[in-house]
Amino acid sequence: MRGMKYIVCVADGIADYPQDDLDNLTPLAFAKTPYLDKVASLGQTGLIRAIPKGMEPGSDRAHLSLLGYDPKRTQCSRAVIEAAGYGVEIQPNHVAFRLNFVTVFDGVMTDYCAGNLSTKESRALIEALNAELAMPGVSFYAGDRYKNIMLVDRDKIHLDAENIRTVAPHDIIEQKVDANFPTGSGSGILIDIMKKKAEEILGKHEINSVKRDLNEFPANSIWVWGGGKTPHIENIQDKFAVKACMLTPARSMLGLAKLVGIDTFDVRGVSGEYNQLYSHVAAISLPYLETYDCVIIYVDDSDKASHNGSVSEKIKAIEAFDRYIIGPIISALQKQDSMKWRLLVSAGQMTPVELRKHVADPVPYVIAGNDIKPDKVTKFSEESVKKRRHNIREGHTVLPVLFA
Image 1: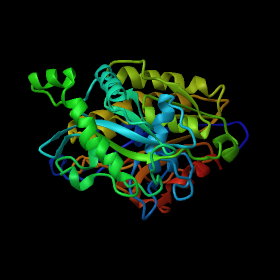
Image 2: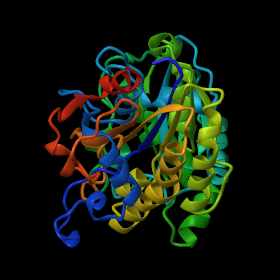
Image 3: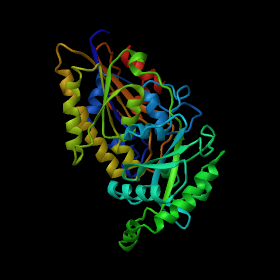
């Protein structure tokens, strides 16, 4: 429809399973979410299958799906996405891997983020790896805190990028690392870097000496995962004939947005609690509609809380998303007299607190606004939207419905 404006709000990881301690409700159903419920009552609800059947759950696939790309046809690894977010240039001969600094004790993955390593500490450790590893064709790039990038030059080191299989460190907490090392052609090189060379360099580093003295989790190992090559992805403006921008503090989404041709605005400079960051994002979202057809907002604090196994933090994040983002946005949109608008709210992908990792289960969504006939759902939750007549949509089909 000519002149229509769109806002997409994604709160990654807010969907979950019922909890005994929450009267057998999910954190989303238990949380106080009057504005999400209001949007649900105004729009059409249902479930999104962000991860296609038969595919392993992962942020790379789920986020591609939510932006309207079929993960079965468009491959883009987590490492490539985050490298783009960090501004790391990947050449055709490169394979990029996500690199976590982790804590391993007695061969067990104890902490996937090395005690929430600071960015300053991480950069010092990356410098040490680059200086001391001395392996031609391997280079390391600093990112945010424990999240970093490793590039492998396939002209110097043979890796079969399509057949290397890795697992995310947050999926193997309290498991033996030996059983979860990379597999496939060339994986032995990766294991050698992770298990021998990097552990030796990190073990003697002064940062980890101090951490051990303070009885903190040391960054005593690295974990590489999510590898891939730079893909060719259709520009989103060519695909949907919309000019879009993204507001997010998440580096991975900044990277994916750049790869698909979405203008990005990094809001990480706004510090403080949820209310400060979220209120800032909500306040600037509508003004951007003067320049763009579509504004996409992505936050992942609920996902982080799930990975950390904290129900209370997850509920806090859900309620903050409702109060400080959805509340101001839906209130402002309803006051618009001259602008036609549609709002999509999605749970992104499911990250159960109990499992502390992503699963492929469908998650709730709602579309409200002009020419959208409301259904009879009045609560935005996993169980409530199951009653909707059209129920489950494949993730990559939701944006086309929004733009139709």
